Length: 273
Ligand SMILES: [Zn+2]
Image 1: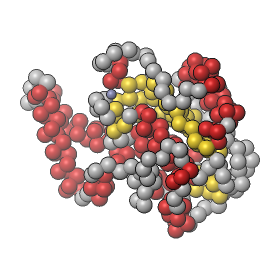
Image 2: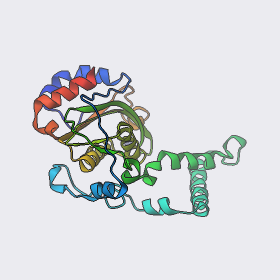
Image 3: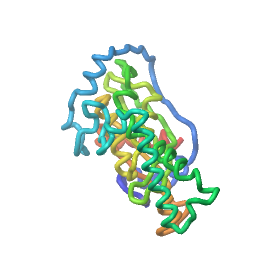
Image 4: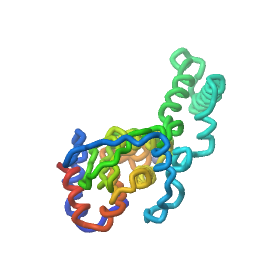
């Protein structure tokens, strides 16, 4: 199943492209030297809160808000700010709910093998959704540098694990992210961490792809951002149509990647190789 970007050259290269996405490695293409200038905290905050809303064609709400939470859900702040006591309370409540699930599927929640399962699952679920406790501001921190560099930068095949918000089962895959700076670059590991933050929330693949792209667009105000994700969904392979091995590709192209076929092609070629 393919959605999102399905125009022109992508159609011809799709097969090779899909095959190549299954490969590993991170490709980082940076031409020229990096003379990094660290912004101080105040300057950085200023960068994050600067608004450029009209630049994104896909923009529907504020992606990087004042707290840097990016599309926070109800309860995000509560989760972020809670005390250890409140955290334990939350885990206990969640464990009780898991116990109910075990009973509902016809299990004996009291049998030995399952005794600690509710607590274990509660903790695992908190980890699977830890993206709610992270913020763009925290992640980016001081890692934005002013740099006279305008060549494409790509971080390829970032492995992500997410939860489908319709079935609460995992979907996993790889994300490739590219951007062309406009005198502002970001630490490369931060790009992967941004992808991680958004994927550790309840998601649909289309939105995940879009959120990463728009967040980078906001933070860096680059000439363009390209994000492609190839993932397989357990809700498709374990239930429903039961088509193991099928994958879903989504992509979001902003700025020059959207406007110029050549740039788009260069990106797609580079993530293929
Ligand atoms: Zn699903």
